[in-house]
Amino acid sequence: MIAPVRTRGHRQRVASGLYRENAANASALAGAATLDRVRERHEHAAAAWSSLAILHEKSLLARQAPASPAAPGHGPDPETPERS
Image 1 (cartoon, rainbow, N blue to C red):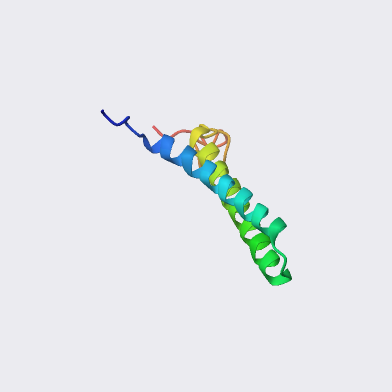
Image 2 (image 1 turned 90 degrees about the horizontal axis):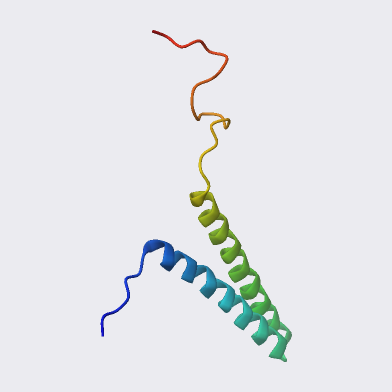
């Protein structure tokens, strides 16, 4: 059997899903914990995994969005005349 080709974009989307899955697992462990310190540790881990997922998804969206010509530093300045 031939393994499917994995593109960089595919791996990045999978990574985001893994972060979300790890956050859900840590949250479940926090709910099942009987000791306060253990519960806090799992809650902290869940928050960290969720933050990683959000940051990862934002970076994916930023790479997909085209650069805006109106953004500073992109394209010529309309107020500056072109030199010949």
